[in-house]
Amino acid sequence: METRRQGLRGLAVRFAGLVFGAALVALPWRGAEAQIGSARYSAIVMEARTGTILIDAGADEPRFPASLTKMMTLYMVFEALRDGKTQLGSRVVMSEEAASRPPSKLGIPPGGGLTVEQAILALVTKSANDVAAALGEHIAGSEERFAQMMTTRARSLGMTQTRFRNASGLPDWEQVTTARDMATLGRRLFTDFPNRYHYFGTIHFAWGRAQIRNHNRMLGDYDGADGIKTGFINASGFNIVTSAQRDGVRLVGATFGGSSWVERDRHMGALLDQGFSRMGVAPRPPSSVMAAAAPAPRRSAPAARPVAQGNARAAQVASSQRRAPQQQTAAAPNRQNMAPVTFRQPPTPPRPAARPVQRVEQGSATSNTARPNTKRSSAQTQQLRAPPRPTQR
Image 1 (cartoon, rainbow, N blue to C red):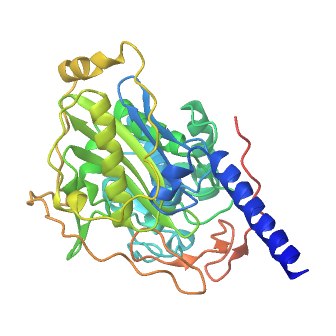
Image 2: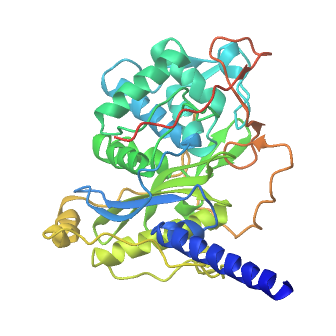
């Protein structure tokens, strides 16, 4: 009798093993996901001139944009500047509603203000949530109306799976995007506003007596990187969209779901290296952070799509058409040249506390279960609604 029971247990264990193995086979891109240890992982790399996709790992899976949202906020601001609806020197007034946004923020009191150009610099460096809300009110009259305009404009750019509910990226279950949509937005920011794109290369922003350093360490560490934006909330992990140019070839990449900004940046650098290699660009020596020892990946790197025939000449064409924008150091209201900062690798950020704490960018915090209500007072919050899964199109 005992022998029979042991035999049945053995059969059950073997059957469970077969089921688990079949599940792994049914998920072909999970190797890329496990590479940075997050179930929220997705990534894409595209060639900027033609939009050719070089790497695609779950690029159409729904994700939370976090502060990558501010890329769309800035697209709308650049459009308003182009159309003469506002000026770089126009004053953006901080309302009580905008001032109530949680960090990261500049902390301007209600009734205070800053110029449109200062607001741009505050978004690309500190990723200030209060300033993003104020810019939305400045352009559209209310942040809610601005978010509707953002969504409509995003759809016209081909971002078919993106919905915006605020201008900052603060948590909202209905504010979703994909890696493909965010990379598309990064590419359009460069191609549609070549005279404004330099703002994304800002290393420092002078605000009062403070020197605010850009959260995007790729600017100081990855050879050729000149933008675009980072993001983090608990629901998304550490995200980034990066544009880099080498030997006349410009790539735009996006990755979601990093467990730390160090891991995220290192992985983004590896993806861009792979993309440049596929475009025939000679490799460059890695920087200190990119070359730092990292845990060995548990599975293979994300599979890359082959470059379509005829795109192999993209490097030569791009080289003759476009030169890389220079990184800049910006100050407001007075600009001054400053030497680029050499970044050292910090320790990996600690895990969040047992009670989820929502952070946007490094060091900021807000509730992961509540969203700012554009019609509430500064002392009120609104519970999130159940998250409908975005319709795949």
